[in-house]
Length: 249
Image (tube, rainbow, N blue to C red; front, side):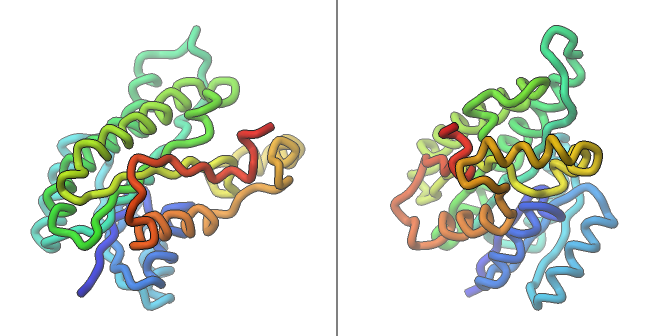
C-alpha cells in the first residue's frame, strides 16, 4: 500500500532534504511551496532519484489559499500518512520597540498560523492514514528566544511547541501521533545572506555549538524519518532537539 507524506515549504532546504529521505524510504511525496521555479527544480531533483512527487503551490499564511489547495489535494488523494509542517522563516529582524504590527503578524502567520490552518485541513486525510503522524518544526529560538531582532520568531516557535502538545492530546483518539523537531543552526539557505556577506560571523556560530560545526539538512531529515516510523510508535507530544549541543552552551 502506498504511503503519502505532505511537506509544507518542501521545495528547498530541510524540507527538500526530508522529501528525498522519505522518498527513498518508499513514501510518495506531496510538496507545497510558493515559488514555481523552485518547485519545478525540487520536483526534478526528486524525479532524478526516482521518487514520485507532486507539487501544490499555495501560500500557507493565507487561510483561503490553504482551503483551496486542500480541495485540490483531496480530489486526488484519499488519505495522508504523514504531515510535516516545515514552512516557516525568520521574516527579517526587528526589535520590539520599533516593530510594526504588519511585521509581527507576518512572522506569526508564517510560523504559527500556517501550522494550525494546514493541520486543520489535513486531519480528515490523516484519519485514514497508516500509522498517521504530524511533525511540526519549532526551533532552538523557541527555547532561547532567538538572537537580536528575532524575538517574535522565537515567540512564534515557542507557540508551535505548545500547539504540538495540544494537537497530540486532541488527535490521540484517532491514533494520530504529533511530535516536533527543534533544529539549531543548520547549514541551509535560511542563513544564506549572512554566509554570503559576513563569513566571520557565520563561522563564529560554530563556537556556540558543542560539536563545533553546523548541522546538515539530512541530519534533521533522518530524525523526521524516525519519528514517522513504527520505531517511534509510542512517541507523541515530544519535541526533539537537533542542535549539536548548542542549547547546552
